[in-house]
Length: 305
Image 1 (cartoon, rainbow, N blue to C red):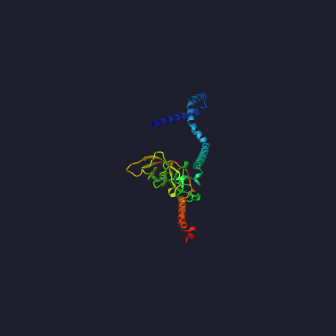
Image 2: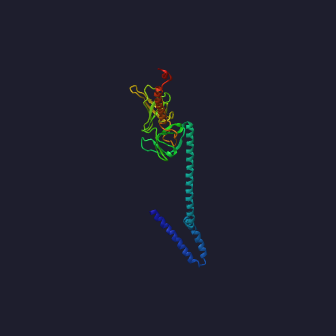
Image 3: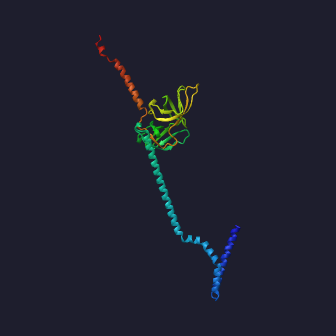
């Protein structure tokens, strides 16, 4: 504060001296020697006048060009808005291209063997701990029904549809704690129950006598008719077999990256239980036809007395 006061007093003294000099020059202007005195005084105070002019120039420039500065500020704001819109449009185009490429890769990896499918995008994830489910942007209007398998890249099973709305559907991922599907080991063709742990997978009900090694592929099984057979699910990561136990403890690592899945394929052509119902229907028809055939009289029976 003291320094500012000294500087202010010094500037005031300079301005006072300049003002007094100007008044003196005006008073002495009628005298014969006034021109020479004025020239000498002018040359003496010229540096001070130049310094004052340099100090005041930014202020005068702002005052003189205030309108232009405001106009330039408005143009700058408009350019920023246009640039932001262009960047948003470019990002949307990039996301659309990425989604299209992912969907094309999914269709190519699954092939025609999967039958009728619908491509869908993950639009929501369940944040609850241990609850592994996602919401897709495809629903009943797209042919989606509860129980249909959902596949990721490489024809790997991601989950199963549990709830369906007109334009959306919820999928329970295979790692969810409530997930349990029929599966088998590809190497030994041994069946088991593949359950979710909330973080990964575990294969239950595999006898301790079954040879299981890390890296064995786990596929879906047709047992129960709830899933098509042969879909890739995971690989055996850890195996622990205790002689006092009936079953082995088998940890399975999912083949699909469930934390980063964005595009999926829903097998809308698969109807859960349809194959099993057909098989049961054929079996019941055969069972009904067998007694009829046994009761029908043969030609030898008719000719017998």
